[in-house]
Image (cartoon, rainbow, N blue to C red; front, side):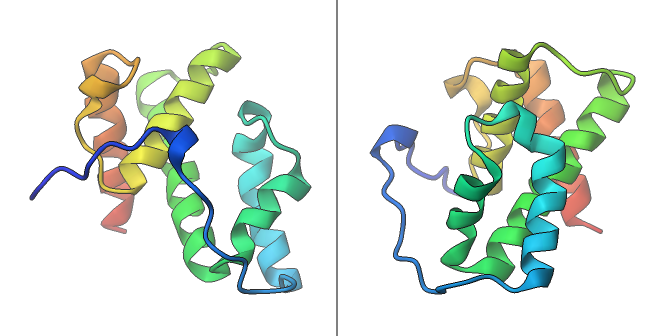
Length: 128
């Protein structure tokens, strides 16, 4: 499999918003994700929700996978303990990239061992 081309996150533009509003079910699912990973993001819940207005079902699925992989990593490798906020942000950033198909963790500020573990956690939940 070819490695996707690296694009700096600051160079990525958002796609067009395709939905004027989100269903109550979608809002509930987004909040569930945000309650877990939101403390480590530099966004409010409302700002986070806007990103789901492009393709709610697929975005929710992706973020649920990211969240479950993050939780799995913490359970398997950190005894459920949280890291300092900046380290947690790095884990979430890596999982976002992993969710797009990036598997070369050498480009990121994570030890290779951590990168491999994150990839495995993400792959394991994709099998569910």
